[in-house]
Image 1 (cartoon, rainbow, N blue to C red):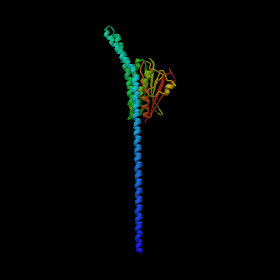
Image 2 (cartoon, helix red, strand yellow):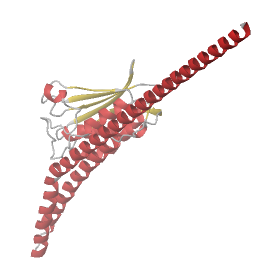
Image 3 (tube, rainbow, N blue to C red):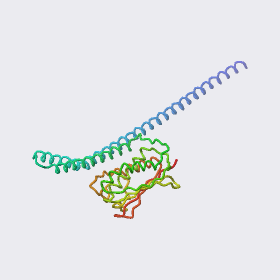
Length: 291
């Protein structure tokens, strides 16, 4: 009797254990399935977020392309019209076959100047497109900023000479910063070429390199038309039209200073401008970290 009761009891316990084990297995399967569902949902959410980000990047690139195309259509129309118009005049003068050598030279000079303005504008557009490339990188190395300033000043002297401007450079050697030499040269060139463009005939442009507590400072001072508070507030935006105008008919796309700011920001530096107001010139200060 006892043996039968014990055997039955063990059998019932065995069946109950098997049922509990089956329930536990079912529960573990449910947990695993839930985990897989959560992982799948997380992966789907990540994929959606990534797709949305890529969409935003593509839309931003498309907007930027539209801005450039709009600028090309608007700002390049006038110089291209000059080139075409002067070419027609030149053809008529040549056809007349008269003693018009000086006039012919004058018309050729008009064409050359218009073409030069067009080239500068295209260069600015290309530079800004490069600066906005999504995979832009900065290659840091020790660079003597004074050397870059001297090189940029020398490159811009012919343009300044055409306007009878003087360029004064105070750039002692060994002002070294960790930066991308090509990018910083581009930024300095934008500042100097702007100073030439907006300074009056016979004006002076001063370039100064100093070391301060927060880094290497490049100053570009001009005697141009100066800047109003409204100009300063939107100076570094893209495609801005300011109250100041170039002093010898040069053309501006409104891109150069936005390029400068982008480059300086990528280096962890700062760009600022000071002006006492319209007619009182301006001073641009670019600060680059030493390390």
